[in-house]
Image 1 (spheres, rainbow, N blue to C red):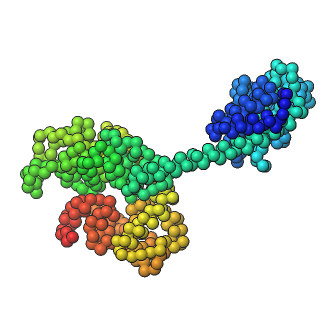
Image 2: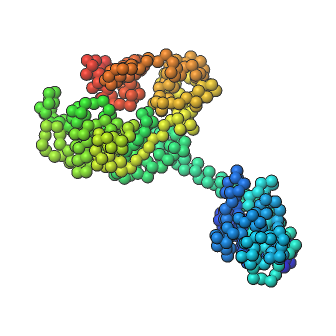
Image 3: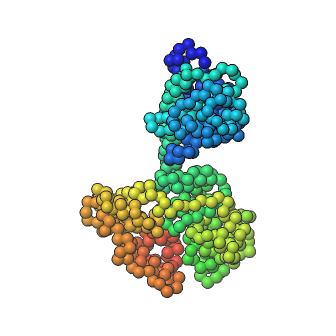
Length: 492
């Protein structure tokens, strides 16, 4: 190496490598600059993959070396690279073949390395990697001048690499935040900025405009209907009907009449012809909540609607054509239902063209307080109350609670707290979680448990059946059917 002016050379290299902020390009320029100035024949750069693992290095760029050769050079116990990483000191060997420090080093002998130089990449007290170069053919040997220059060069390079890594990390984080903001703006009706919800938003954004059937899976209270509504709102069908129906507790005959309609006189009480929800939703969307609850007979008829776009009203032989997109939801394991013969496999695959899994609230830690503050604002206005917010203890309580009922339970909890609170901020005692709540009946029939839950919810809402239906995540029409069966007249 013949340096007319080491400082000018370093300045030129600095300008060259600092003209890019792309890590791969930067590393290539550092490697090429070092090789050119040192008149090296071969070389590579090692960087630490994991800052917490002192032995986890990877080759990020190389010149005239195969992966196998690099492995031989860096891994032998007496190798140049290993000695540099362990000592954190630059190393030069003017005549590597006769250097006692590498006696027994197979890589030096086998590779016929004539002269070698290697320097660590150290930032303050942190070892980030190393730069290795050698000569095999050239008779020129690395010298002390080379060593001093490569030390200065490595200090310049490591700072440039570190700063570029920081910049890249900030740019990636900024890009992620912009994507989150864009997605949140796209779905203002859904509150959430946690990573699990961002993943859901991405899927909704991708598939909303398609005509594919969507199956939304998740625990009760995770917001499956909100996602279904968003899919409809961002589709070409948004100007037509979106009709949700809860399949969970309607009898099979009643659900069939609701979905497919009926002919006058088809059964007792069928006083006139009535179109079903599929016909009402023609060119729109039908959301079938708890699809896993429908019987085999209805599953067959639903399959025909999906495959052929045809249906028959109850008591009628005439086929009618409909164009609907079906979005369904379940908190059951439908694959298990299929394997146990309770759900048609062909229908499952027709419904599950696109699958969206709703995350439970307990893994959406970043959304809990966001949602709580939204509900606080909403119910405060509704109840004509004003609060400063949540106490520190209340926030801690909300974050640590497991939320088995998910967002719906959180909403009910905040509503209850607003109603019960007389202070200027919400405290944990007003949440009344797992305290003084009516005990769910055990050893009763499913119908009795169902009635208990409905009546307790109606009581909690002060008899407001519309609100009770919202809390139960059912339609008001379904709730009215249930109450009518129990001989209760609608007083609202």
